[in-house]
Amino acid sequence: MKQFISVNDVPDIDSLVSKALQYKANPFKDKGLGTNKRIGCLFLNPSMRTRLSTQIAASNLGMESIVFNVGSEGWALEFEEEAIMSGNKVEHVKDAAPIFGKYFDVLAIRTFPSLKNREDDYSELYINQFIKYAGIPVVSLESATLHPLQSLTDVITITESFDFEKEKRKPKIVLSWAPHVKPLPQCVANSFSQWINAWDHADFVITHPEDYELSTDFTKGATITHNQDEALKDADFVYVKNWSTYEDYGRIYSNDPEWMLTQKKLEATRNARVMHCLPVRRNVELSDEILDGPNSLITQEAGNRVWAAQAVLSEILRSNG
Ligand code: CP
Image 1 (cartoon, rainbow, N blue to C red):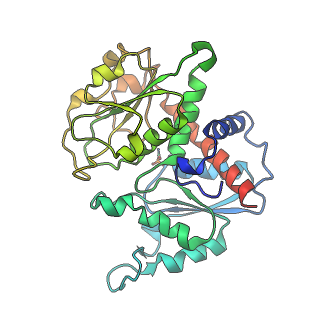
Image 2: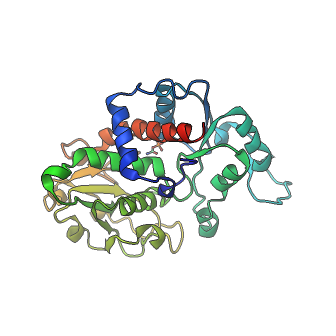
Image 3: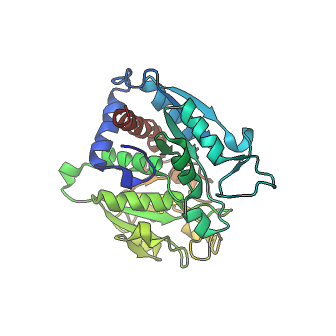
């Protein structure tokens, strides 16, 4: 694996999931793989799980990790080519990224979208500029449109929670939109859709209010419905997530609390396990009763972030010497 930006960088999802689960069973089995290797983790935006799990994963492989909160502690970066830098941007990515390439063996980056201009965000300018100028493998810690480490984690969590051999059928997985108080990126929902479609081991349904359609680049292949009750019928997994509008970009059209998943709504499912990437707004996106109840996979899911990151870093190290 030369880089990890989307599911398209993964030749075999099941093999990567299996590798992650091997690390979960035996975290230090490749302790020597990252000896004398250093990963730079650059955060242009806040994080808890991604930051900590990536550092733990690197440590398990014997790598040194250095975190740099570029967004709050670094010089303001310019990303546009041929920019006349007379505003408040201090350093061009063209000058900064090659230096990261000298300091690190692997570069991991978090860059959120602006949610102001869809074309700009969906061009993935920021992470692509790092890839172009760093000259070392780049791992996405969540970019403007995708969150692949989260999605790999989600597939790992579903794999270990569903007995494929016993059930002899595909699980029904429902991605269910949830209300939120502020406009959030589409990254997690795009990425989850992209991975579940590529994985091809599930009946995949997406449910959201009208006008919250995601880009078909990611959802193609899924069943899409505005009827949440219908979608939840016989579900094995419900993945809860808010996102803002894609067409009329970055807006909130609905905050209907009826879309919040409750224990009552789970009665229509096959005792579905509930997932969320976190952080979650309690009693807005998800009810206390679900978050604190037996159907929640959410803490297990967040714990699995370590094994997803470790599997990816291991593949990057093996492929890039
Ligand atoms: N799920 C996730 O990416 O969490 P953080 O934003 O805390 O890293």
